[in-house]
Image (cartoon, rainbow, N blue to C red; front, top):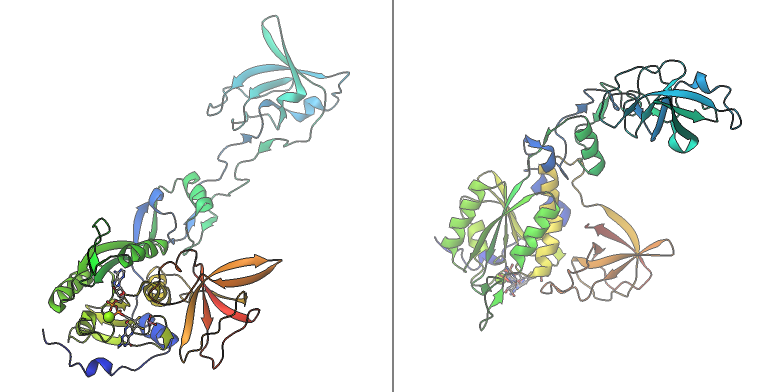
Length: 419
Ligand SMILES: Nc1nc2c(c(=O)[nH]1)N[C@H]1C(S)=C(S)[C@@H](COP(=O)(O)OP(=O)(O)OC[C@H]3O[C@@H](n4cnc5c(N)ncnc54)[C@H](O)[C@@H]3O)O[C@H]1N2
Ligand code: MOO
Ligand SMILES: [Mg+2]
């Protein structure tokens, strides 16, 4: 493959981050839905509205261990003159009653048991005393109770046919419980985007390799895989390529044939061996952008290849992290049919002076704290794009506009929420 003329590498037009996000989102389509076992639906968005196929509880259910009774039998009961009822059967949970409760009778029942016909309340065990006489069981109750006490009627929680969960609802713990109780063993959910991850750089070692002169271990690929998972997608590791355009091109093609999106790291700047620049300049690639007016990650680039998004993130770990959140995350949200693609933002007070000035907007890795009911954001350390220690604990990005002077502690700033 022909290398891009070295002068062309410098001819880049910087877009504002919002313009770049818009160019990406214009090209992303939601992925189809798929039927999946409920056990795999956690965290995913429902692709269908689901109704209750039966009422819940599906039978009149006891809320206490005790006796199913007819309240009319207890009308005149007092501690001094308790009502005495004959116990017809003892029902463990999960067993259907064999006899109805008639006047003067009761059935021993457990929490979750099916209340027999005729009974209209359950008296808790602690309010009763039992005895046997002539081989028959009796229970004495010294207090009257209202109808319906400790008895959950059929459908009192969920009526048959009601909307259980709307389309688009994210399946969390409560949703899983509802779906399980209604027998929805399989549900339609949005397909998980398969995101290919490729690292470029002849300096890269695998995580399990010992250090060697001039080499570092590949930390971007595992970081990106973790981020991809955090956003409900599935990482597909393509490994790493040395700074060789043909090798990179081959893996890029493979990634975009087999996955829904490709993230690469490294090789996007103006270095002699920045191979992604050449890949993005190839006729197969429809370049969306190759420079953004921001720090870190100004050389972050993107193209459409084989109808899919190739997002070429900077090799610098801090820039790679920020680039993922600004450009990959919205694309994933769109693929997953999330109604809002933009990263949520909030206002907070800056907890430390930030005195660097820059012609570009900066996104500072930071952590959020609540102090006496107000939200403060503290940079996790130096915001240099080469640093990864400042990604640890970062739960937001402080947005610092291009200003002629720095910002002082206590200023109200905008931050993007990452987690
Ligand atoms: N003359 C110029 N040099 C640079 C410019 C510029 O405008 N003019 N831009 C700088 C900026 S800003 C950034 S950001 C970086 C972008 O670099 P690349 O995206 O081309 O990435 P590489 O050159 O491949 O690597 C940069 C840095 O990151 C390390 N790296 C790469 N991959 C990984 C990985 N998978 N895991 C961990 N670390 C990785 C790599 O070893 C380098 O140290 O360019 C500036 N230069
Ligand atoms: O754009 Mo680079 O990430 O500032 O160092
Ligand atoms: Mg480079």
